[in-house]
Length: 252
Image 1 (cartoon, rainbow, N blue to C red):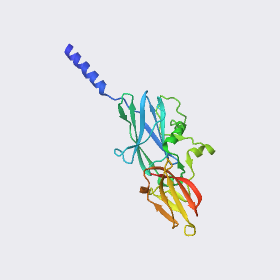
Image 2: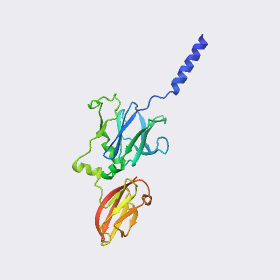
Image 3: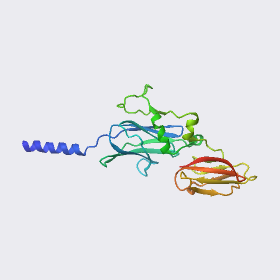
Image 4: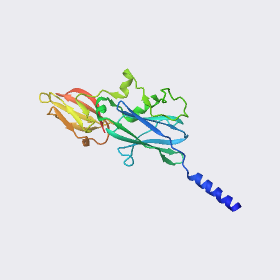
């Protein structure tokens, strides 16, 4: 009898030691060309939470950013540069003990036509300053105030207004812009045959990555493979050696 009791204890503790507690459920929504992610963390002393994205449900995940505020309770992340089409997201949660867990996966689909209408947003790292503005509501429409409540998939982001918004969004150029259907950069200059246009692109470290000394045609497509990596690039457009416009494009 004692031996049977001892075996039961060993089985109980062995089962308990390998059982993993539930990871935080994640929900998301698309708003103004951005994907908003939200969840509630019940853990303390986390080392990091990496947000990973893929265009399929199981493979090819890559880290697109890290959660800035790791405090227990509601957390959020803003992906201001989602892929046109299907985006799968998951969280990779690292604890102080170096144990790493992965959250559930969610799918958000972004309409390419919507991306074409939205302004160029700042890099994801800068956008996380707005994550605290994300609110989720219950099914009755009232704000979920208790951190014990799990977020529902009804999310909204309160964007800055007026001059404050300039730190997070850039007006999309009518001359140079990313085509969200192809991912390539379109250059449209109706009077290109009567003026001398040139175009330069710079990365976030202000290094020049592409120089086009002459644009002879009204419509030119720049293959996205000319850029070193995905992200935001600043451009300077010159007409007859005078600066016509500076702006930003996103390489998906």
